[in-house]
Image 1 (cartoon, helix red, strand yellow):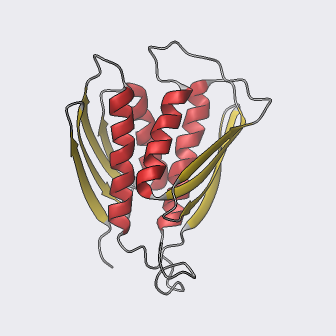
Image 2: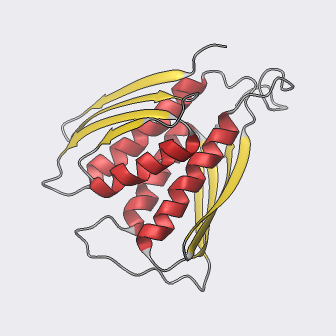
Length: 200
């Protein structure tokens, strides 16, 4: 089987990022974005997705985390798209639900080539707000949207329960890892591109 690996580099006036990805890894990771909470989430993503992942990022964190957070999402999405190549034989669709104490997130996704993100929150979910200096829910949404856009993924993320932001986002990133692992797996019964159109 061909190795499904990719390296993506992005160098702008705002950030300098390098991502190395092996889809068929064992969950080894080295993450250094300068945003400690994002490092933690990406470690969970790699561990539970069984991806080998290296991320090195330097950004204008003296301004804020916005550019680094977005550009890491962009590069990770590009790395998945590149590593998947022509996408022949992949399962394409997958989903996973993951609890983390009081929090519960469910992700259903399609590596469709038609990127979009739909994030819904149950009415009973009341996530405690954090200060603006910390990683917050909007930061996570921005990261996930950038990732989906560049990876060509249609993702539905449903937050079904939760109060603590850390727990909620931990359940989201673990569920994303498990979903991406299942969707990117190959199945010998699938011949060619998994689409009646013949392309993704």
